[in-house]
Image (cartoon, rainbow, N blue to C red; front, side, top):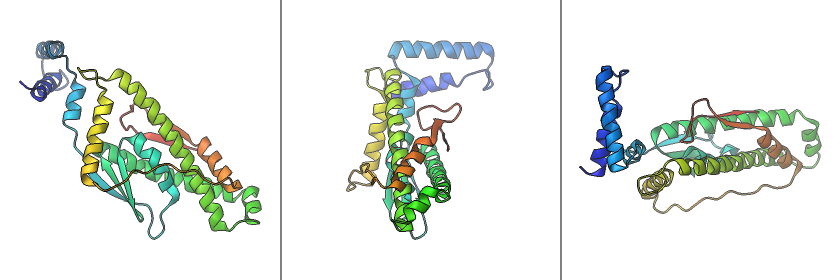
Length: 241
């Protein structure tokens, strides 16, 4: 048997449980067979997950005519969710595994709502009235929203790096190569095949206006944490301000 056949056979044994209708003796035999295959070939079931990875693309609207400033948070969000993103006008394409696309799409909307709520709070403050004496309202909004989005993006990048480092230390193939690295390589290869001429994006910095400072503070106090029971592989992220 080749590697993929071995992994598929391990999957069959893994699914033979009492919960799935097998008797206790059948489940015990399956568990023993699974253990034997793992020991003989030094393989893990997570390698099969990578072998069977499939990707798709989904479009998300960032606005009707004007793109919402949430796009400034996407650099960190795509890394955190394990997907790739492309912006064309007000259209956002999210590319990756279906369950990770669903999570990333949810996160885009959640961050957008959080940003709008924080800006509404800022507009009701004396700091906004003070800024209006020196800047146009559109400039104030742009500085606040972009600074908040960049700050959230930076925090998500840091969280993704930490989780990736922890996952790499735990999940390795029989050759010692990190499964996280292999999975990301497969995603990147599929994405480049879909967008062969696309360049790489980068994070940017905002101005030092009072509105930008308020936006960064809003991004700092936005609570970012994983949902209950979710792991590093694109699990639900919760935000609260």
